[in-house]
Length: 389
Image (cartoon, rainbow, N blue to C red):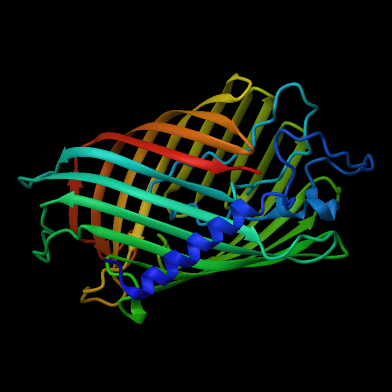
């Protein structure tokens, strides 16, 4: 039985999901399979600058899961690109950070031996997220979004934390809710922020020290050539590889309609040479990498594959050191299929090879490590349902 306060948080999330599904007639951004939205721009404006058209300002959202290095929906695959439907004209290309406003799924990794212990470890996880506008977006007006996240990670093992002598906790929970605000300015810039409050722990909301507050401030400013952008950000989360405020500045270079690069921090590349190929790369400090290649196989079927690191970070409720965190880390190479099933929904299946797998405690990702447990490489399977509008 979940604690009362956790049941309240989960109930709030469920209400948001229901509200989102019942409000699909609200136009958030144009559905993938809808007719082309015509926007007339001057020759000096590139079609990848959605803030020039206030009705497209939602495309400037930093990813709802901007904290790429956490990817707090436990072990979910990242594949939030909106493929362009064949037979249609090329849509206005969104900038970096476009994600599915609704996703839910699960992850499973079978038993693998624990190094230097007579034990095995099996992992499974469930995750969900939703982001929905608070009110109907109006052209030229600020936008508010409600956000909710839920994740459950189970570590089925009889392994022992070697330094503390305690058993590995069996379950971890992530419950967060918050808001994102986006404000377009008359100058053509966009400013805003995201704030999420919740708990990431083996005993969620057990004490005040187990609470999380993730904050992002961001601004996008048109470059002098009116084609590119400057991106500024300030990120902080106590459950991140670097639990300190992290500033970001990047030049968003858009030489043509097929290529976009964020040069700076955090860096990223997105290349769509044609309607059948997509290549993306993102990095977020400290050791968070996501590289993905997608290839269209049929009208509504995509093959994708890539490499990424995955870090889950929690507070142990009974920890002795206040600033200590519990880390679940691995690297993974995977291949999967993305099937569009209609009404903006997609179903993704991903099979991954997991390696460099470890659990440990530490005051940060690189310092004060104790209770290090390594376990063998193995298979990971995930299934995810997304609504991309």
